Amino acid sequence: MLKQQLNFKLSQKLSPQQIQLMKLIQLPTQAFEQRISQEIEENPALEGGKEEKEEYDDDFSNDSLEDEFDEGNEVIETEINIDDYLSDDEIPGYKLSANNYSPDDEDKQIPYASGTSFNQYLLQQLNTYRLNEEEKEIARFLVGSVDESGYIRRDIEDIIDDLAFTQNIFTSEEKITKVLKLVQELDPSGVGAKDLQECLSIQLRRKKTTASVALAVHLIEDSFDHFSKKHYKKLLAKFNVTEKQLRNAIHEIEGLNPKPGGSYSNNTKIVAHVVPDFAIRIINGELVLTLNGRNAPDLHVSPDYTEMLKGYKVAKKKTKSQKDAVLFIKQKLDAAKWFIDAIKQRQQTLFVTMNAIMHHQQDYFLTGDVQKLKPMILKNIAEKINMDISTVSRVANSKYVDTPYGTKLIKEFFSESMTNSQGEEVSTREIKNILEIVISKEDKKKPFTDDKLAAILKEKGYPIARRTIAKYREQLDLPVARLRKEI
Image (cartoon, rainbow, N blue to C red; front, side, top):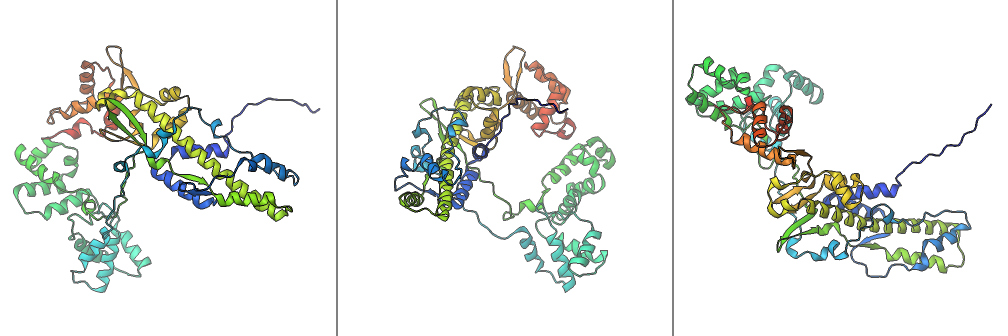
């Protein structure tokens, strides 16, 4: 026997428009500009620049068009109300406009020279050597195998196989080794090495021979493991040298370049050009927040498309092809209007969120003192502006703010809190800053262990466990005590 049952279920689903809006909010300035260009290219009803003609009037609203299409049982999606998606906080238009910027505030594009690539630079040097055709092909192949750091991280056996399959060159290990030694003579010194040890050895052997250089060669080639782990006592005993001699040899090694490829000024790398999304200035002792003018583009609905709608309304006969064409126009107009509204909502959301962050960290922005950063998590800001935590996260994750103390990533202002010995809540950023200062002032001959660092911070009023010290130290990219040791 069949049993019927009725269940009520409450669920939330994001519409495609809401998803697109969230993606717009997450984009930093440069990516946002690319998104606008893409939308203008894909939607002919959307145009950039200031509008010269009036937008189509209310006579061509959704309701009138829906009435026209009801006859053919066609359904047209209603206009999107962007206010339903985020909060209704009202921000004056002048705060979001780009007109509050002086010409000095405009972002200047920095030209970058193209030059020659690192591999081309090496190939040019090969032309100065006398090589037969086979050696030239092998040398070119080896240079092509050099990575951006200057290393050839491949086994000779693999190189021999690749030459046979790709270049139809059948050679021996002896020939490859001979040509590789030649490649390793190219500038910058150390290029073509298979690992760090060989790279440092090549550079040392090209230096003028002195007692310190000779000892440095032995350290790298004969005791690289002890040297890398800073087992200085074992090195002193093995080579029977004084601390001063060992110190001079280490000084020679510290002057070498572990990444010879990175020293080439025209090396082909992507240049990271950070564009601040916000700017904070101190004017008469007050903080003033502005939104980058590139986040407030001039967009409007195409007047040509509105004229097409007018032409459809006055037409007495409406064929199916005309209805299809107007349906397409209507969809493009709705998409253009929604995109313009979404951009305005994006401006408002960015400004409201950053304004709350600025006031929460007011003491820091007024002084630049890292120790005045207050504990702040996403929930704190979300509650202040009455928005979802995910929205605040999208604003903070990949955007920058230009402050009197440099350009900062917004998410760096967020940190958890802990209670000090006085019962006050302090930011973990403050603790990390103190930890970094303590390590920088330690005796490098006897660096502090994590246990000792925990004891020192406890004396300063920050009771922290040793494992937490280790976590903060790793986040600060500071090695363990043994690797911080100097002779």
